[in-house]
Image (cartoon, rainbow, N blue to C red; front, side, top):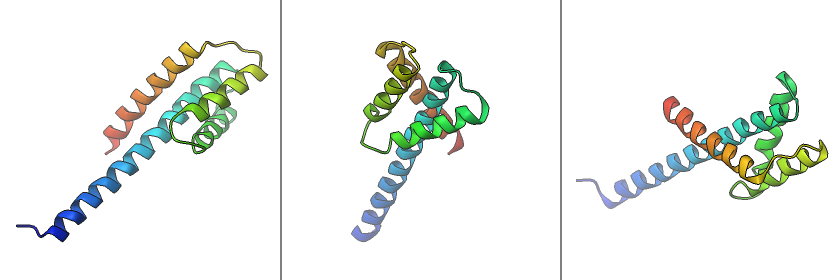
Length: 107
């Protein structure tokens, strides 16, 4: 039977692993969403990838996705492109589902 210390270490490792996966999913989601937005504003190739990385970095400002929504809405406003919050959130949800699928497939 595992000692208390062994069980504690197992739970700590499990928690750390889950945190790492959650971070990977959020980063992948932000990138996928950033690539979708880049397409909407007419960016391609390296410019689209650079923009997607800016979206990933914006997501590090606070927990959740409100920080990237502010960034994306600001960028869309700057380009005078109107996309409703409903569509943006739907695409963000799609990106999150795809990110989870991709990360699970890689694990």
